[in-house]
Length: 192
Length: 211
Image 1 (cartoon, chains in turn purple, orange):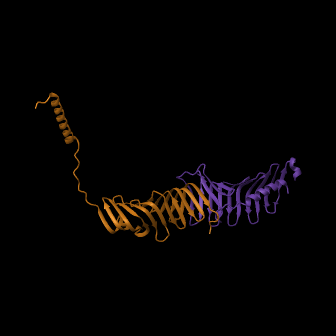
Image 2 (spheres, chains in turn orange, red):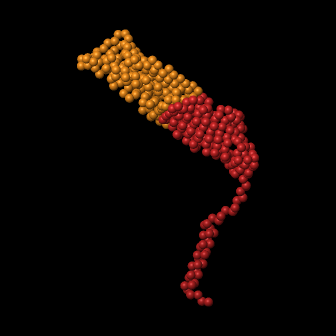
Image 3 (cartoon, rainbow over the protein chains, first blue to last red):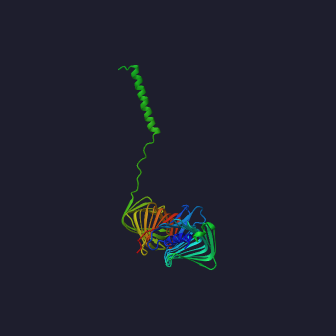
């Protein structure tokens, strides 16, 4: 496999393998809402429904932050269902771990199903590459990350574009579906 | 006996001084008020005291000793205090002493523990203040509450009986199973079971605390 893809695969595997961000199954973690004045509502917890909701869009400088080990998700709105351990971040949603960063209009984590989804202007940035797509679906069980819709993988020396891009992280395989176009500069062409 | 002129002058000055001192005391310094007869305070033993608002029973206290002085009623050796809502008992309070200001309809409860009859509500505070006019129960100091599996701590608390809203202020901690919320302020709607968190919010999950 191309060396440039190997780096991306390793980072994705390290990151997506450890994205369990919730507290429901006895996992330690923290949720923090900062920058909210004392007299302003930062969030509401509906104990009967088991739902925590926070919306700090109207508060300048305020941020919702969820941390578990070295994974962090931030955003301006958040909903967390404690019963099935479902977490959704919207508005400026960003998930980071070390040199991995995922941004999207929406970032969702399905704790029970162990799935991570992101949609709308999805950008995954690692040291080796940046992946753009409309959607990202990751399943922990199969260890697959699927990028769909206007997929663009940008390396330091080239670009790949297509509609569907599957990363089989456990097998270290990449699958491109449909037509894909790529352009790479000459200086690294001997690596291909 | 013949007095020298110096002696005469001295006697004259002394006489003037005595007269001046007498006049000062007589006309310028208020004589002490005569002792007023104070009616003795009333002390009752083994009493049932009932607080009402517009004729509706708000609270009822069984006490071994009731001391009334003016508008202040001090109750000691309390058996039990019952708070009523819509004529039905909804809170029971154990306290060391209670002081009721009849005019203001404010009841101070010292070293109190509050519990309800059905839902397992428990509240502990060094001082609770029941304001009959506002129908609020205030803990101006630290409070500890158990409520439907929640452990709540706060530096101050106000509970509104009419709206069933619990206001928690400063250094608020709410433990819900393995989760610990740390908050600046919270308002808990006890009927709707909704909690609004104000200011900075921190939720800590604890490892291995689940059942």
